[in-house]
Length: 249
Image (cartoon, rainbow, N blue to C red; front, top):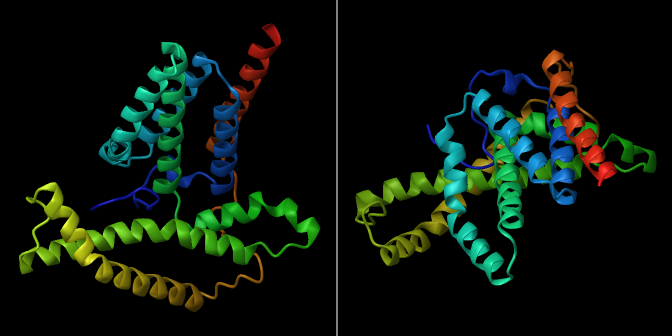
């Protein structure tokens, strides 16, 4: 089984069972704190909690590692740029921890939350906008379709590359230039097959009675359990810690 960033990994875990609304709220809290805090202690604490959630998701750790490994050149470039600006080691470390925490947390969200649960969660989180009579369901549906499109594109690309090897277009053992040629040559078929799969998903949603003109009910994820409350309390404690640190400075 192959898994890609923003793709759902279907296994049983307590993280998978968490309410998608709670997950998104916690993601918003983590994102906000990531942008406004400069405390290495708080960043390390959030990274520790994020790592624990990833470990508890029962998703193979190699998938989380693959995401970070795919950003290796960005990390190297970032280190060079930070060094050129003469930033202190602690400041550079904080920035790297911020990026790693965000990527791991996003990975955890998407690996443990199906596309329908993400739609449901976003709808509930954006419910306050209903006071302006905004019909946000069509927008959310398109947003999630975009999110789902990329892992579907990557998985389809792999299928095409495997089948292309039987015609002499070997990607696995080729050099960098040959790999680029294979990808470019097969991209047209990859894109066509991905669009066909997206159409099948839309048809499946239609057959299940999904409508963007009204909110849907997801009986399995409507309840907030004990673990949801614990996760919220932990993230709220991050905010309290941030406020405490700011008050004593």
